[in-house]
Amino acid sequence: MRKSPLQVARASYQPKLPKSLRGNVRMETGEATESVANQTEIKSMFPNTYGLPVVRLVEGGEERSFPATSVGVILSGGQAPGGHNVISGLYDGLKRFNKESRLYGFLDGPSGLVDHRYIELTDRIVDEYRNTGGFDIIGSGRTKLEETAQFDRGIEICQALGIKAIVIIGGDDSNTNACVLAEYYAQKRCGIQVIGCPKTIDGDLKNSMIETSFGFDTACKVYSELIGNIQRDASSAKKYWHFIRLMGRSASHITLECALMSRPNICIISEEVEAKRMTLNDIVNHIVDVVVDRANHGLNYGSVLIPEGLIEFIPAVKRLIAELNDLLANNDEFNELPTDEERRHYVKSRLTAESAQVFSDLPRSIARQLTLDRDPHGNVQVSLIETEKMLIEMCAKRLAALKGEGKYKGKFATINHFFGYEGRCAMPSNFDADYCYSLGMTAAMLIYEGKTGYMANVRNLTAPAEEWSAGGVPITMMMNMERRNGEMKPVIQKALVRLEGEPFKYFAAHRAEWADACSSYIYSGPIQYFGPAEICDRPSCTLLLEHGKKI
Image 1 (cartoon, rainbow, N blue to C red):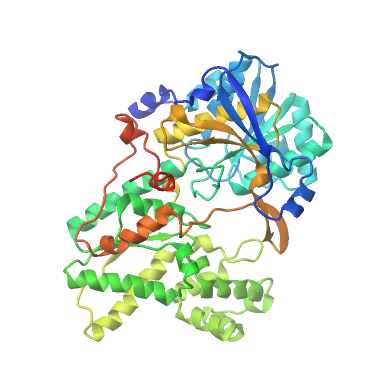
Image 2 (tube, rainbow, N blue to C red):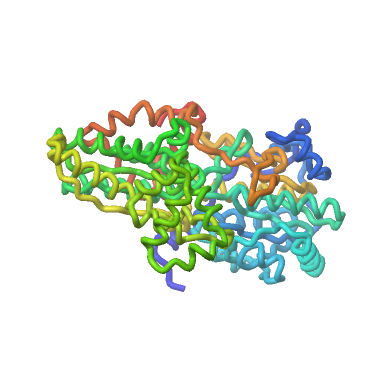
């Protein structure tokens, strides 16, 4: 396969490791833990894996070797830069302590475990994928491991291959599944360990023990480069407002990080919208106020960052969506109506007065999406809604009214963008390459030490890599009970943007300045793989601010 010069150069990059993972390693055991909430319920559901201690890997001790073992690895959910380095770190860690150990990759996600599709990973295969983006070494998938029949199928293939441990690389849902799987295998005493690794570009898998999920750093740097390029173009052409929607349905971490890196004129944070109980009109009026103010200073251009999941955080729209889900689920009468106008009237006549008004205020194209595009469970597919186009249309309508009143004399030419898949498979930044390799090496050590129901973790991430701290945290420690599909289920608690957190506070303190300035933009440029550590190995602004560092 032909490779670019950068691919060739990156293949030779040797990820940096914490001191504790370089030489002789020993494990320190902490105190027993409990879940973040619903302790009684979680303990009763996970009697074999609840209350385990946090463990830490430290340098020193005697030189050790372990019996050969076989391990399976699964890439689960959406892609994130660095997944290949988790696998290469896991592979190297297993081989380091016993060259006879073997690593199998289950193909196309969790379904590979259930359907018994796999390959053995070898030096040749792993070396081909070091420091590369994507999940194509074995593929990924979104099959959920929730049923005992699936677990039992996993036992069958593990016993056939002699696999003693499974590493699941995924986000909060995937690691919740890992916890359920670990509990089941512990209960069955089948001798199969389960270890998780924290992946998601969305940044919402973090807590007191997991400082960040891998892939977030790289994805945000990719998006911020594109935003900076657009802002440079905007300040050059001086005639377009760019509305940029960014990935992150359940939390606004990506949008906030990109704002910190690029300093847009306007940035909407979903969690603030929900906390302040803002309406859609409140958001539109906020954007319009900035557009009008900039126009009064001769600046008919700018940038607006919008999180993908914004619409679900607007309380009135959230209630509307809930009503629509109930109204239209398996509704043959609605489905048989021949025209869009009849369907629109049908819906409005059956909503509460407040929701009917919200539905009427929406652009017709968005209202139609809310009624027609539904997932297999009958729910609105919010991620398909082009929120940036909706806001452009509503802002244009409001500005036209102000122009008619003589209160706005500017021009409102717009361009819309959505940045999502562009960042999920980029070559990992040095930070993610190092972090992921350390996670993989840590997972190997947890396996050799006989641990199950743990997530590999690496902390102290704002320090140089050699000072990072590696270990494991019980997955049950991160869990609480939440309603899913009408039932209360144990899940890893999602981390939303904290309005009292330092990243948001920094943004809130500076956004008025960024809105009014002639040019406050920052141009981060592409990811830097080569050069001074302060440029190439720099962690995200979010991570720096959360640890009291300056940006």
